[in-house]
Length: 201
Image 1 (cartoon, one colour):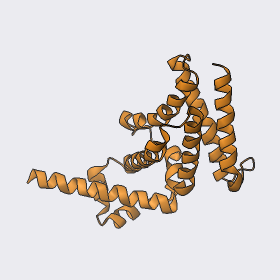
Image 2 (image 1 turned 45 degrees about the vertical axis):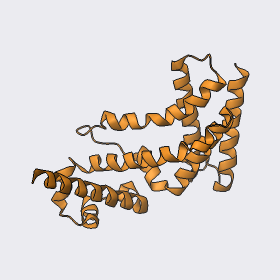
Image 3 (image 1 turned 90 degrees about the vertical axis):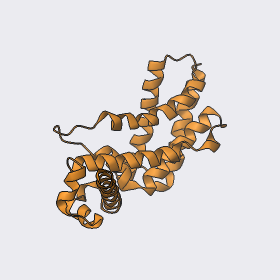
Image 4 (image 1 turned 60 degrees about the vertical axis):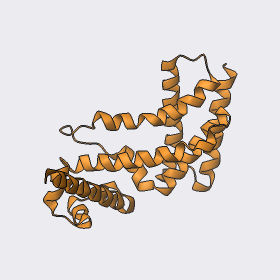
């Protein structure tokens, strides 16, 4: 009997995550409402709070699934045999493509700030680390003598540079780039950074 209750709880959890994911994808994080999610999931409003402590925790689980989808997009097996520079270019282009295709889900990764009473759990913070790891790997080939700590910082710097250009452009900021030029400029940015790294070997 307890096993069946636990199974139903997991089924409800999965339905709520999927309902929230679809709402965020369609309407954005700022328009997310618990009542809409539970209606879409086919449960009472109180049902949400039997599996999640609050709406913030539910969003964390949606963001977790988004990170897994992004990781799958960025770690394609066919890219492994390319040069370090080409792998970095593929990462940047994959990141841009994901942001364009799943704009609201991608934005939710960076726009969600849980309340102090419900901080982001460590397991979810750890999930973000793959972004740095996949960048650090080709950087290690470009600059094999760079200390590990410096390489980690360089990976964050490179990510921030690409993310910044993508973010301000997709938000339509006045310094952003038009979408038709964005992919080319992101590519040039990465090539320039990679070339600089190779010259310093």
